[in-house]
Length: 83
Image (cartoon, rainbow, N blue to C red; front, side, top):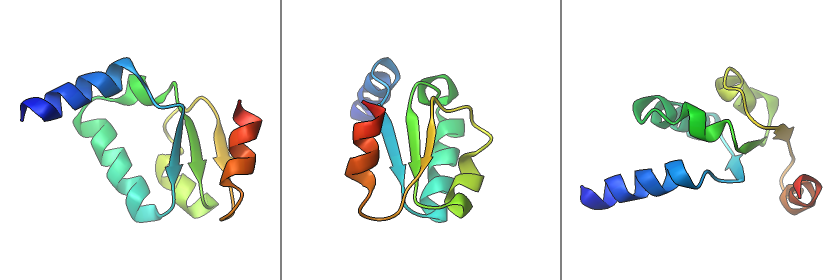
């Protein structure tokens, strides 16, 4: 339990640059985690990369730094555009 709190605090202090989401189920789980652990202010500093518009729909209501739709194999190319 203490490790979970440490990880959550680390995540809040060091928001990820990019979050990759490959399925609607992953998007729903991420959305639930954001709400459960009050991470909305954290993820707004992150770029969101979704594999399709359908996957993005679940997370579209959150204000992300930037949002990208990609096709499999393009991840590295789009990462280079972010930097």
